[in-house]
Length: 332
Picture 1 (cartoon, rainbow, N blue to C red):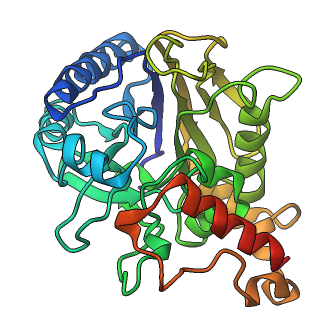
Picture 2: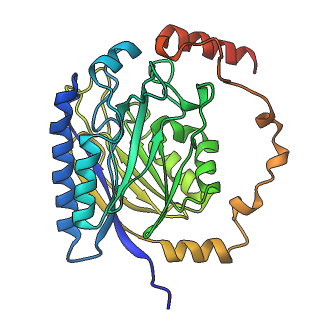
């Protein structure tokens, strides 16, 4: 007899200082571990929490303007002490955790910094997701898409005992193609780790946050668990951060939502993976995954923002990003 796969998820919204050196990251990780305990304990009498999601930059943000400074002061290899601590907690509690993102270095790609989040479960680290669409021109960490010879999956999906989970980071979600690729790779639960700032935040008249989360859930027949930074202006100037972390079901229904504004929040909602699988199997109308006429879109047959073989990722800068964006605009 098949077990009905239904459990609670927790979007864990943080308000933490941004580290300016590696040793300061530990305090943020310790606070996240405490929030995991709180979320699991709070839901224990009800539907148990099995998946917890933290925002982009919860471990560390790209607070320096150059790749060299990021590598010198903040970048860490993965796995590391932070992922090890989360793995220990995940095993202790029998949960899965989408870590907050951190600045990653990898000896396979010398001179390169990535913005990386990890899915960690009782069995350990299941995947690393490196942001494919940095928020250019400001973000100077690399997209794996742009690296010559990069041969790792851009959009990994983990097949776990609580369903198939895939993640993308913040600005990635403004590209429906990125989230569609996760769904094509099998994702049933789409995780968004974000540092989404005002004015494009969680309130009208520009509630991009909610619009995008609900649209991606609808068009991919998938749950969306979206954790956003609730960091106060004093912790991460020059922007303010609206929070509003959410859980959305596969028909775009809002299942849980943090009130907008800075501050820590934990929002918990039930998700029913068995119901999602039934819908995907039985639905004929509004099945955009099955209805996709991929050959109808020649826009994807040509490059728009292609890898630049002449660009040195270690020398990435605001100015270089602006020049590449302008070149891509001329190709439109």
